[in-house]
Amino acid sequence: MLIDLDVVPAPVPPGEKWRPWWGRVAVAVVPLLLLGGGAAGARPMVFEQVADSGGRPAAAILLDERALYSVQEAADGDGVEVAARPLVEGGPSWQFRAGLSTNGSVKLSRAGTGLVVSDDQTVKIVDAATGKDRWQLDAGAALIQGDQVVIRGDGVVKLADLGTGRIRWSQPGEALSANFDPSGRYLFTVDVVGSLIAQVRSVADGRLLATHPLPGKGVSIVQSPIVGDRVYLFGQSDVTVLRLGDLTALWTAPADVLSPASIVACGKLDCVSGEQGTSALDPATGELRWTAPNWLGYSGGIVRRVDGHIVLADPATGHVIRDLGRGEAAGDLMLRAAGDRTQVTDLRTGHVYGMLDGVTPFGCVRAGEFLACRKAGGTTVWRVPTAETRTAS
Image 1 (cartoon, rainbow, N blue to C red):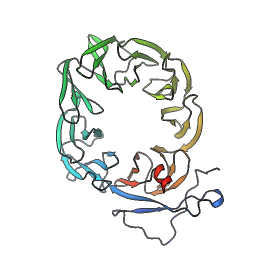
Image 2 (cartoon, one colour):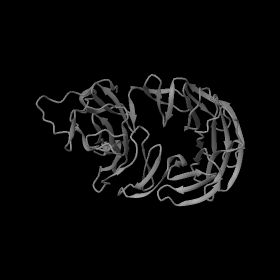
Image 3 (cartoon, one colour):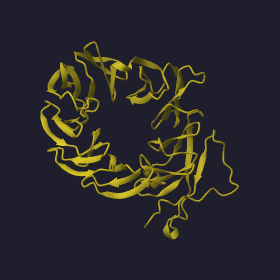
Image 4 (cartoon, helix red, strand yellow):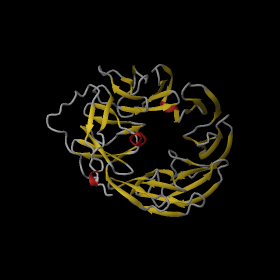
C-alpha cells in the first residue's frame, strides 16, 4: 500500500462553526482516505486544545505529561512570570514572578520533583507541583547534570542535590566541565592543574580516582560525553576514548567530520556528528564503519540531513530506509508546514492524521499524548493520541 505524504486532507466543510480559540477547542480532523476506501467508516480524529500560554509569547517552555510550564516577560516589563498550566485533572497550576531575564538565555528543566528556572546569572529551583521556592544559586558557579549540580568556586568542587540544595560532598578542584556516567558512579571533570587535565571522581564521596593529561589545544572541554564505560574527548578532527574508571586511553581515531560535537549510541556502533556529517565508529577499536557527510545528527533511527529532510536509517550500515521529506520530528509524529497550517502524520508509517491551523512545525515538542507548538501570540497544547491510544480506539 502506498501512502502519498504530500496529500493534504480535505478542508473543513463550508458553514461549519468553530469555537473561539480561548475556549477548549476541538479541531475536527478529516481522515485521509486510504486506497480502496478501507478507512471510509473510520471515526474522525480530534485534536483537542487543552492549554495555552495565555495569549503571550513564551521565552521558554517545558512540556511534560501533566503540565505546560512557561516563562514570559511580566506584563509590566519588570522581570518574568513563571507559570504551570495543567493538562490533566489535578495537574500543577500556579504562577509566580522572578527577577530573571528574557533575553534568550532563560531555560526550564526538571530535576526530580523540582523545576529549574535559570538565566545567565541565576539558577532558581522551585517545587514543580506547587511553584514554591526551594533554593537558588549563582549560574556561573553551577554545572547542572540531571538531578545533581556541581558547584565550583574558590578552588573547591561541591556536589549538591539539585532538588533540595543539600551538599553531598566538597573536594579541592576547579571543574571547568563536568559529566556523570549513566550508572551514577562516576563524575568526569576537566580541571586546570597547571595545565588541562581530565579527572574522574567517585560520585559517592568525591574521591579522586584517576587523572589523564590533556593537550592544551584542539580538545573541547565543553563536551565530554560518556557512552557506557567510555568517555569521549573531541579534537578538531579526531576522537580520543578513555576508559572511565581509570582514564586509560583506549584509542584515537579520525572522526571524519569537521569539529565533532556530539556522540550517541547507534545500534552497536557509536555515531559521532559534527558540522560536516556523521560517522559511525566501532566502540571497541575506533574503526570507521560508515560515513554520511550530509547527516546533521542521528537519534533513535531518525536522521536530519543538511537539506532539511528527515529520514529513517539503518544504524548498522548508514543506509536510508525511508525519506520522510522536509519537516520536523516530534516524538512519534512528523510535522510539515502547509501554508499557515501544519500537517500531522505518523513518523513511522507516514499516515496523515490531520492539520493544525495557524501553527508552524518548528519548535514543537511532544510529551506523552500532548503536543505543544508556537502560534501567533503564544504556545498552544493539543491532545494528539499516541500510537497505543489510536490502536486501542
